[in-house]
Amino acid sequence: MIQENVSLKNYNTFGVDVNAQFFAEITNLQELQQVLDFARTASLELLFLGGGSNVLLTCDFAGLVIQLNLKGISVAEETEGHVLVTAQAGENWHQFVQFCLSHQYGGLENLSLIPGNVGTSPMQNIGAYGTEIKDCFVHCLVLNLETGNTKVFNHEQCRFGYRDSVFKQEGKGKYVILEVTFRLTTKNHRIRIEYGAIQSELTNAGIVNPTIQDVSRAVIAIRRSKLPDPEIMGNAGSFFKNPSIPAAQYDTLKQTFPQIPGYPGGQLVKVPAGWLIEQCGWKGKQIGNVATHELQALVIINKTGKATGQEIYDFSAMIIESVQEKFGITLEREVNII
Image 1: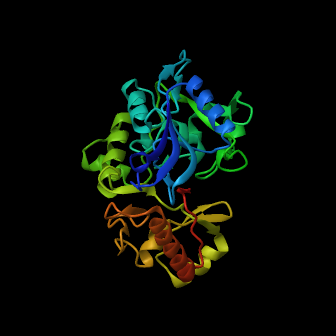
Image 2: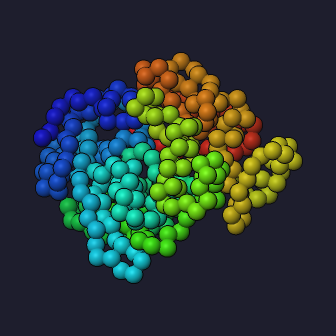
Image 3: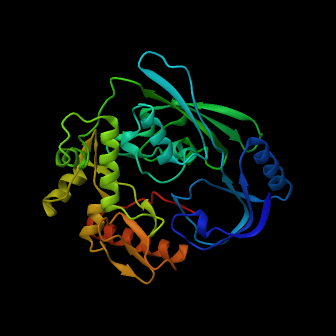
């Protein structure tokens, strides 16, 4: 079950070639308990990998890497207009969304084609096109790595924020998510088409009254048109969070940069990181083995397939520095750095 000196190149979407001192692929809770016992006995640091889509590995990992491959989707009894659906952590996120759509379960269609697995979705509170995990999330089952006991985290306990949750804050490294339960609609679905290019995509297809399946197809088409496929070009999707800045700071920037886009929310204004990066001349720019994508400056790519994690990290640091210098805004990496 436990292997030594294993390359992680095929286990991260950047395609970075680093080695794990120990590696184990887990298919059930019993196996997980066994490898955790091994790690405790050997005093090994742990790293959990799901789909490897939101991580940048900058060096070899001296410890035990665990890939959670827990599979299974179950459906609870339906209530009026709603259903509870539980997916195991190792289920591919996009395939899970497609499963829901095939059964006419609505709520996740705007999150189609997001890379990664179900188990990591609450950690990041993944979101796209006006929808976030927290909108449909009910609870998740986690394993406490210190006690070995399982625990259920409800919506409030997860403390969801923008690309954030308790699992990225005080709970970081303390728990591993085993399964996630969502409350989805079975009828009277809420169709969200006001974000991004969904409406224009539907209009171009001649669709006036879109279904949840139509919305999913539109989102897939949009994402494929501007985001590189990790299997062809190593990347982790959006590398940076969209920064939220004080309204007064935004107003000041607007005087110097009249075209700067902004989306007000309370006392803060969210500014698209991709726009900031593009204005600094980074869109499509390549340095060595690393580049930003030619169609989306927010995406950093392993252009030659030979980039090291450190090269990618250094490239991102240069972007952060130039955005800070030009706009006085500090970008925050969305990708987890290991």
